[in-house]
Image (spheres, rainbow, N blue to C red):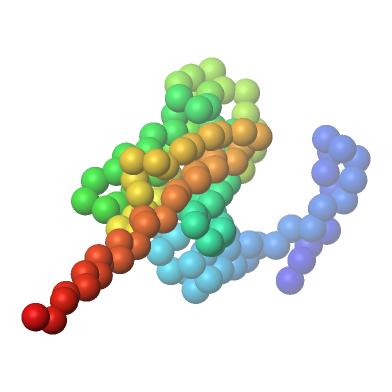
Length: 152
């Protein structure tokens, strides 16, 4: 059920759905059941792609709008952790805020990756145009040495 009501600010008509909030809640609950744990709970994920280039993996993580200083890479026990944190203007001066609508997300973002097959000493990282790119060389497979024995 939609009601047509005038929008005086722009002189246009807008549709009003009295069930919009319930529809949004239902969509978040069933489309992403962990939405509240990650988005309202201070930790969210970001999207990554990992390509196998034969001798190395290329990991690309979308982190648009982050400062390089707010992205941290840590390695421990064959686990690579990428942490990023984005701050907002309206967090600091909420009472003086001029925002009337906010959709961009702010907060802490984190992902972990198993790097047990990676030569972790040779990982290289760069951040450009909102994309973090990690070049991760694979560990070289150590072949057992063969030895020839002479028969006496």
